[in-house]
Each structure stands twice: as C-alpha cells, then as structure tokens.
Image (cartoon, rainbow, N blue to C red; front, side, top):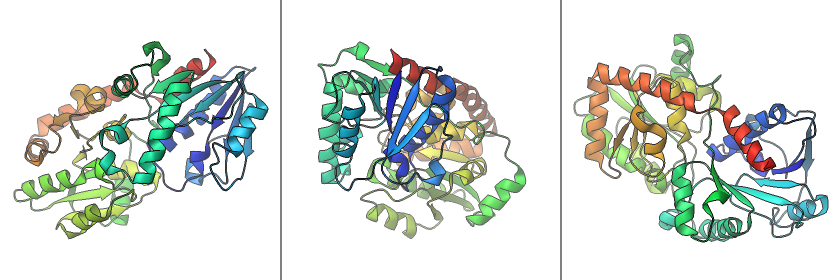
Amino acid sequence: MRIAVNASDLDHSRIDGTRIYIQNMLKNFGPDADDRDQFLIYHKSEFNPELAFPVFRNYKIKKLSFPLWWTQTRFGWEIFREKPDVLWMPMHSLPYLRSKKTKTVVTIHDLAFKFFPQFFPKKDLRRLNWFTDYAARHADKLIAISRSTKKDLLEFYPHLREEKIKVIYHGYDKELFNENISTERIRNTLSKFKIQNSKFIIYVGAIQPRKNIETLIEAYEIIKKNFSDLKLAIAGDLGWQYGPILEKIKSTEGVIYLGKFRTKDLPALLRGAEAFVLPSLYEGFGLPAVEAMACGVPVIAANNSSLGEILRESGLLYKPNNPIELAKSLREVLENATLKNQLKERGLERVKDFSWDKCARETLDWLKS
C-alpha cells in the first residue's frame, strides 16, 4: 500500500503537540509496516532538526517548494498526480484536488476554535473553520485524539457517522520522560534557567489566551502568602494574543518566564518542580500532563474537555476559571506529602496506557483499513 503523509508541519520552528505527534508517527510507521508498504512523505522546505525522524527504507521524502496555499496547490497537485492508495493528513485540512482512487484520513486534534472563537486571530479562525469543516465532511475516515474530541466532532458535525471516527490516544517519549533523571542533570538544567535555589510549580505550553495562564497566576498569588520561597515557572513559546498574558507574567513577583526551551531540557524542568499545572480552558489531549506524570510529578488540571478523561484519578482536577479552588489544590499538594506521593504513583501507573508505538500501530491499522 502506498500511503502519503503531509509532514509540512515538521518544517516549523515552533514545537507543539501536533508536531511531536507527526514526528513520533514517522518514527514508528516504518518498523510497524509490512514489506509491501511505502510511505510518501511530503514537506515544503527544511525539517526542524528538533523534529527529526529516521528515514526508513520504505520512506520516500518529497520536498515541494511553493510560496502560496501549498496544501491546496503544489501538494494537492502532487497527490492528484501520484494517486497514492491513502492520504493521511495529520492536521485539520484536506486538499480539494485529489483522485477518487485515493482514500483520505484526517486527524482532528481539537475543536477549541469552535468553543472559544474569541481567543483566535480572525484570519486563523476563518482558516480553521473552513478547512476543518471541509475535512470533516469529505474525509473517508477521521482520527480523534480523545473521546472528548470525538464527542465534540459529533456535536458540531451531526451528519458524521460515529463509526467513521476512531479515537487513538497520543503517546509520550518514554526514553526522554521518566523518573531516571539524575540530580546533577536537574541541578544543571535549573541553574541554566536560574531557578536552582527555589521550590517551584510549573506550567508548560504556549502563551495564548486558551491556556488560561492568568488563573494560575492568580492562584499562585493566593498561596505565596503562605509559601514565601515558592516560585511559579512558565515555560513555553509565544503563541498569539500573548501581550496581556506576558505583561501579567512579567509584572507578578515570583513568576519566572522561562521562554522557549529545548525539548531535551523539559524532563529535568518537570522533575525539579513540586507540581505541574495545566489550567487550560480546553485541550484535545493534554500531552504535557502525560509527560509530567511520566516524570513522577503531581499534576493539577482544570476539569474540562479531555483532561479528566486523560488524568482520571492520577491528578487533581479543579473547576476552570476558579483560582481559589486551584490554590486549594496547590496547597494540598505542597503540604501533604502522602497525597503528593499518591499522585506520583497513580500518574506513573496511568502513563502505562499511553505509548507512541501503540498510537502508531492503531493509526497504521486505521489507514490500511
């Protein structure tokens, strides 16, 4: 079977969950496929070195440069010309121009833009609605990265047949995210980010409104009255509409903005923290929470979208937009060593349910079906 993959997102400088997902699928597709499978992997310019993947003998990399509307023009024409058996789009889009002989599968990561349109730039909102609507209606099959995302798809696209959507959870990098991180490595990483002499809680993710970082800062301001030496570390690249958030971060005493980080530094940052907090208003999956659990760090998250589904009993959930309740959860973790250890053990048990190898095998089976 000839399977085409749109890997153009791996050219981007900013690393996010979608790009980590594509990278890890390509790390695993080659070994999981049989000898008759060939993968045609398309992109536009140069792969980001941090998103590199091994090129197996059944991979054919195709770089197609084009200045405008690449997916709908240069890439679309190539897919129409090549006529692969299956086209996998690991993001919310689908080329209009394609052969009827080519079956299509699209991964839908989340529908946050449907629930919170005010948190997206207008041009991005138009694009997301247009391409997601088209993909949902015209793809032969869909992948949802959580049951929550599947539920949202069926809500916004009631014409969809449920059997057309398969839920396939993300995995995480077990070699990178685990408990076996040396004290020296943690110390050196924390020193690099100038937080080596402090206890801290941490948030990891983009700086954008949907991530609801202000609620975390408000909760931190409540508890720091009782934990004077506690810091709040915010790690992540700038997304969009970040101005007021960044100003709040930089103007709040005790909050440290770590900025963009190398992926290899993240496990030590997580391992050095007292707790990881994911205050998002909406997540399709919540990969940073899984990575934190894998490092043995207690996780606290807003109880919405997929987060309760992914964490189950392994984390503390609080009402979204409620800094007082979040502060209470933080205080419980900081003061109760027994609870902290229970969350750690539950988290380490829960992450056994997630792996990129399993995700890739299920995805490949769905593509080939």
